[in-house]
Length: 626
View: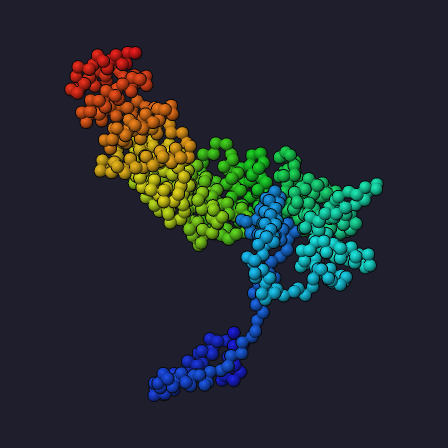
């Protein structure tokens, strides 16, 4: 900051801006009062004439980017340079990486086609001003070792780099370090090659040919680079086979190398016994070579232990060893413990989850992204709290997430699952329907947009309280947030509406709109309208005194082979009798008889006592006797 103070200033000896301002303040207010009360205009004029000329340094526009890039270290298994370097966006499998590369290639071809066919649409295709040329170009470069090393670190033109390496190798003796850098380059880019054997040309990987030339018992770096390259491109069996060979020659790799081996064990062997034996051999080698394990080492072991036989006990054993060595766990470490506990048959106690939450609440873990699976912890914890039906654990997990901006751990679309499980956990044992809606309103729509399975659980909770009065409110939210109507949502929705006696009479039209709209969307999406759904719809029509519409709906679905159940037609008959609708009552009774529904003698006699049905008892009885 001192660079911005002119040497002509009386305070040029000050070492910072703050001391400059303090001196200026003291000088100004030590003057007489009359001097301080000069006119504003005079002060401004004097400031303009006496203000020191600040000499600003001209800085390169890329300075900040260069400083940031200097903090990024290269690792052998880093994503391809065309991939996003992000733990969430990175494609983790080779299939996904190939799909993205093919998509990019297709996009480039499509763009070239459009540019060629309609060039007049892109008058500014050439950059203005043009991009500056690189100091060293792989197209035309002097054949020196220094240029080769520079290209290995900065170029992605694989073909040119390989040709330059082949030329220099013939004329100069290259150091082991340069050979190893070249091997790392071709392993990263998966460079193809060829060799002639018995007069036939065989296509092989260039890395295989180069490794065969430079490998030796003392060149540990070449062994490590080759194995990491095999792991990167999914050739895990070859990688472990090569590791077994070189491990007999007192090989010593880096910590990153052994961590990578532990991460790839599961996909390299067919049975759990061999997998765990290999992990034990690798950790024994690390101990023998005095390579100190880190958090990444134990996270790899914990991840592997969750897939073994008896994962819960094995994971706890590994975690205790981690704590014994005073290695600080990350959220991913606790995530592995939770999923191992969940896989245990008949898990009913909460001791593991309670212990994890107690440790986290005591500040034993830094809430920062240290491992890709750190992002999965909160979802796993809330998922376990929900399925253990323990809302006393769900609330502390929620509060832990909301503390210190931990909400970032739900990035990448994970918030929907977390908050959905939170609502389901807190409302499952709610004492009444009002509390169900209260918990729902605490997070919707403030934190997330629920999915259909959340509304499914909410409707089931309302059904358990026989409280259809809140259904329109939830359905309105579904419509506004464009939640699709599915079968699993429709079933509990209509089952809740089936408690028509609890529907407020002054709001009955509102419930009819919900029932009709939901049925319409089921039809649009070609979902089957079941007998129970149709029965609820009929009841609500009758509640709104629209018996004609109810009968019309029944006839419509009769053609589709769907009929209302006994309770719906009985409710319809009661409505007919209440409205003194003789034609409607007889039609309903006839429909019940035609559908083969049985009415007990006592119940039938009670209906026949109604004045409106007087004198028609024999006819009605004959319908049921067919």
